[in-house]
Length: 286
Image (cartoon, rainbow, N blue to C red; front, side):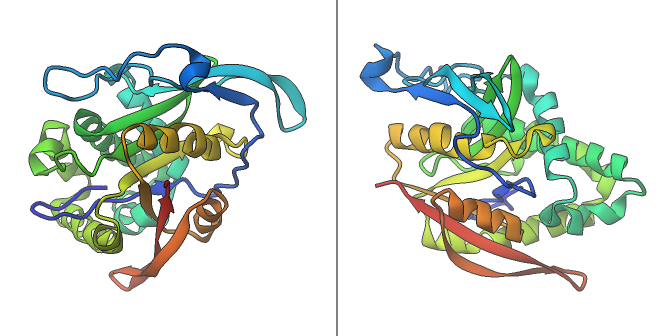
């Protein structure tokens, strides 16, 4: 999740476990370019960053007749930048979606007596990470029926990388008393190791730092749809030609392979005698 200071590599990109997603389960159509009519350029603030809470240009969601499970209904997903007032709820969504995902649990789970306390801590960690990324990169959300159903953190390779000061500004110091400084430093180190292959092989790729779907809505194609109709078009619209990410479960390996990513590296991460898998993926957008 974090990048240790003075390094080039990205952090993590994980999709919540049991990612059994299928494009087309939700009936959604996004109008593009001339189909949607004139679209404004991306909004920027005075510091040159995209304003939070603004809709993505050129991609407008329209409901079509689709289905979820066996029930036919109208369903619309619209993608936009996250708003600051949503960050707490987004952090809770991601913490519950990932649950005891191995990349996090093998560092932090033992620090907490109950699963509820662990999830609460992960929500604090995710909130810090969302805030930091929203300032310099992109925090994108999928909205359906006025409810956030998916969230992604996407890092621009041309933007200034995040540093320790960014995380301090985003509430990072408040994480130390709950899990301990040593454990957080372990996480820094493991994150660096996890992303070495992406940093080395895909230095110019847009990095999918996080992709999560509301835990109560898994299996409806929302993850696949966000990749196909939000992340890929967004990166292409900004001149990007490649996406990259890492993941840590077999289920996610299958998910990303189904959704157009190619695995190019794999190995193990270890902490205190416990090992987890670590696989790197890329998608060519040219």
